[in-house]
Image 1 (cartoon, rainbow, N blue to C red):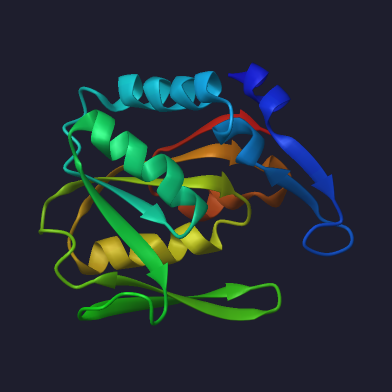
Image 2: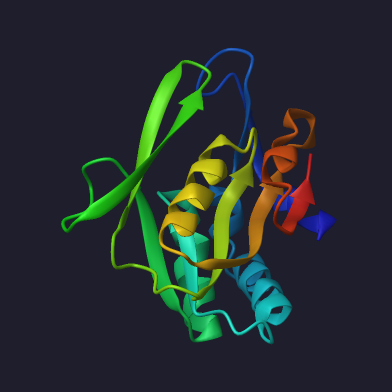
Length: 171
């Protein structure tokens, strides 16, 4: 999957100076490579009896929805605070400049449901740490956590060490 790097654009100093942003829009804009990503993930999870694919707003939705469809699984969105219309539970996590809160509907996961977590990028692991808390509160069973891109220098995988983690491309 290292050839996927050719389809991921690197943008220096975005969103602020000193950050090298890994842009997946060039990957998802290429119909063949986007299909390859989804097909590769679907093959990986085909025999895992996934009940639902849970994805984080917003770039995770791109991959999560397509993968859920391909697996014949449900799709569960995790959104920023105040974006979901029904009763929710929340998890707050730290950012380098403060805190943020994620929410999921209280009835989004049935106890014991087999859940695949997906996001576009693993950096520090804070976001997915909060998502794990939400899944645990709803008594879901996390099968694996998957990412398209992993920024290894930031050691986010260490915060997720209680669960299997898979990434397609590492920087």
